[in-house]
Length: 197
Image (cartoon, rainbow, N blue to C red; front, side, top):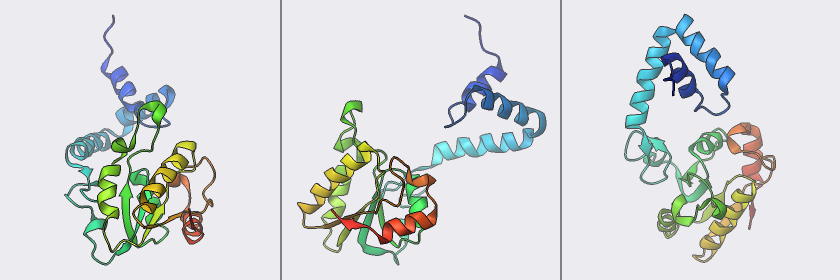
């Protein structure tokens, strides 16, 4: 077997990014080597530091360098609502719509075919949060994919069994779409039009 050159290794490493195929990775590698070596070195330092220091918030499970993220540390947020999303990028999208409650990030969705069950998406931790008496409403903002809908249904049953009001964001977000790609106006309308399930 022929050993890969360092350039080939760089191209392969860049391909881990979503949407980056071989040709795009080659262009990026050549651009960094030809014109942006200092920026590439800075990127590699920040990337290494981020991989070492960024973990998950102890409460909501989004990304943070600290035990609690800046949203969970904010005492002015509304403790009576919690918005359940699949990914940390969904938190960013909903924040742009001016939501003021709390979050819980599943870090995925239920997918029995892939062996992903309730424990794999943190529903044991979520159960502890919904037992809080101050919590009045759980807003489900999972994607509109089959897995997202199944996850929303499972969580709604969990919440109803504990006497919590459960709403689902309206489907202003396109069917089969992901929240991180929707604009803030679409998300704001979806939040305003949420319904009980």
